[in-house]
Amino acid sequence: MSPDFRALDVSGKFYTLADFKGKYLYIDLWATWCGPCRREIPFLKKLEEDYKGRNITFLSLSTDARRSDWLKMIQAQQLSGIQLFLGAGQRFQVAYKAEGIPHFILLDPEGKIVNGNMLRPSSPDVRAYLDALPGL
Image 1 (cartoon, one colour):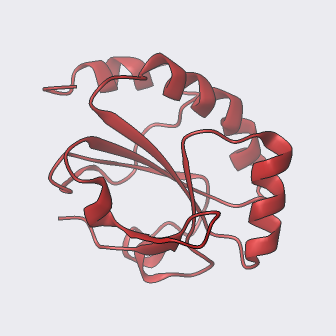
Image 2 (spheres, one colour; image 1 turned 90 degrees about the vertical axis):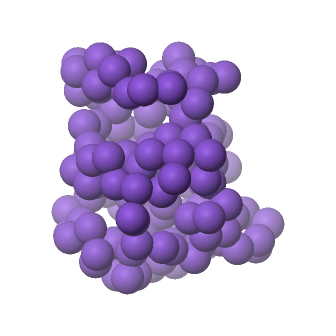
């Protein structure tokens, strides 16, 4: 099973991993100051669009130190998908040994780890990987 997290949405509501059970969960650990993270955004948006209505949720967890930086970026870039603020150095990030970001994780509908070091949205193989998942 995946470690749990507790993260805020833009309105201040807390979410945990249990809130996302029932669908595959593609998690993006990222931060506003991270160049490679920002370069993945258009690819992630396209992936979300291509898999809309399928049995998968796309979740971006910000590891920024300041929530205000994250909020500004969401508005400026009109980020889609589910955007949550995790914060820097949280237990969830440490459990996945995600010292470098962006870091992608794929969980099954029960919250079990399918891939703790998932392909990036920009990878030419990501769609084939996702399409091979049973029940997607």
